Image (cartoon, rainbow, N blue to C red; front, side):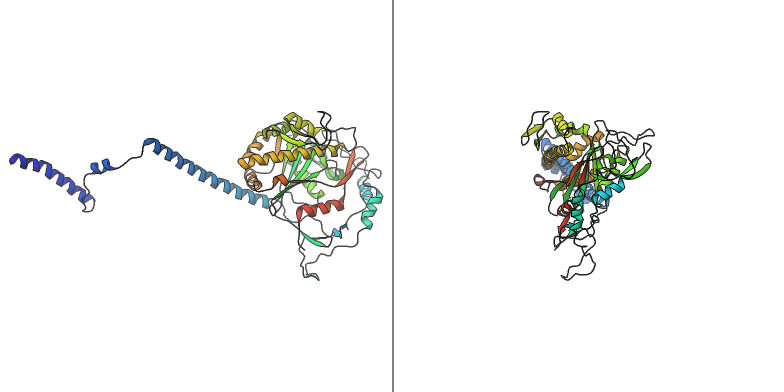
Length: 454
């Protein structure tokens, strides 16, 4: 009995003491043996725990990346819309029944601008910002007079309601019996192809401000968020407009009538040249707001073409260098793409317009390829830019690119329409000169940038 009592004493009293201590710790409730509870707890296998940890980490990374992306997207949108004047182009009282009330005699205007024979300045490529005389002014005097004579009075623009009860707003235009309003939500970007194969130069005290390089390709990309359509307006490099001239030291000389392509040449080849080109082209299009610019030196074309896997192009004209005929569809290698958009037969009149057709065909194919890749990888435009960044000058930031890339996914890029600024080429004193058909351009501007009000 004593041995039994001793056993009960040794085993029982210690257990009771343990339970008593646990009860105190748990507020008076007996919890039993902690070791026993731990042994009864089930554990997940180690591989499962590792997989769960990885999944949780990926979810956290995705959430953070999404937050960063949407923050960049929001910031990019805000910058784009606040970075350019969104007011309507200065088309004013230009239309009544489809005619141009402000059209002046083109020959007279050209004669006034060409009064000083010293207004010539060569850029790096050898083209001259030459002023014109009365023999190379514009479309014929007869056509200019026809434009003036068909004008039938000014369009009435008022802040008060007209007889139909419509209240005009600043920037509204009347054309062919309808009222149109500028779409201020449109985003417009200037893309310049610079006739240089080297990387972007670094400006310093030895910079020659005639060495910026000419913009042989000039395109305006237009994003319309209202109908989710992308349009392109191609500008002929020889379009005659007011160009700001500078001397080799970078000092302003004067403004003269010259080919628009030379404006980029008057600068350091970087942002200075781009800003001047943007300003000149905006003014040529009645102070159209331009929200950003990208200049690409043509040395990057082969890399761009190959980065998207090559571009398919339907040729608008014969290309004798490779024996290709108009209407045939070819898959371009990098070198072929470069040669196609650079080729110009200098012995053929108006060959710049022929080359512009090749550039438009390549651009259409290239944009479609970029769009296809962006649908599966929204970061593709940014990585593409980084690939050729040494050849590119732009004021479009990474967050703005993020916004644009995400927006373009919802656009009908395959339906992209490419317009050309209307006009005609004549032979000037030294070079071919392209004169814009103002009335046709204004009608085109309404189609691209305006919306019908009534």
